[in-house]
Amino acid sequence: MIFRKVCHSQVDCCKLLGVMFQNNCKMDSHVQYILSQCAHRIYLLKLLQRQGMPRNLLAVVTYSVVISRVLYALPAWGGFLSVELINKINSFLKRLLQFGYISDRILVGDLLDDADHDLFRKVCHSHHSLNHLLPPKRIFTNLRARASHPFQVTRVHYIAA
Image (tube, rainbow, N blue to C red; front, top):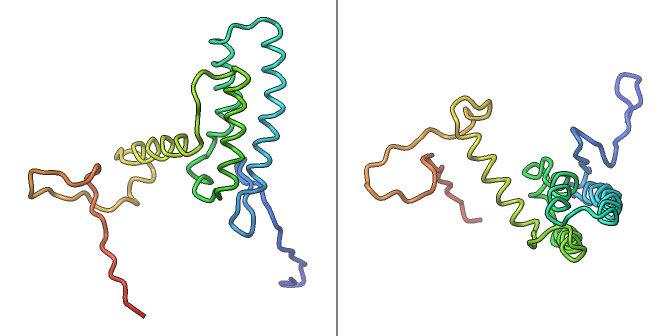
């Protein structure tokens, strides 16, 4: 593509703040990148395990160097995960359990739900920079609350085609 005598080309994938975005709105490259990084970190965990590090401390290191990498910006890219990618990440997390690096099974769906809930809870504070994007708080006329948050939900009317 040429614009003002400067040649521009469309890229298939770009890395922005540590998250790899593809032009087809898939996260294949990002998940592959994360899993390869985590595989390198598992080698370090194996070395620590061979040196005799206790399992409880090994779990702490695993959460700090492996799980934290999966959690980084998860609310931003987690919604674009396909079933295939979710299964890849879950099988990787299952290997952590099989190797004895963690004590409880972790699923990417649970991590995503927790990350989304934490982000929404933080945005609900009035001092947060994204708080102004939320709809106005609703005033309850009924004593029984029907939702888990006090914000008005916009009603959408669909026109049948």
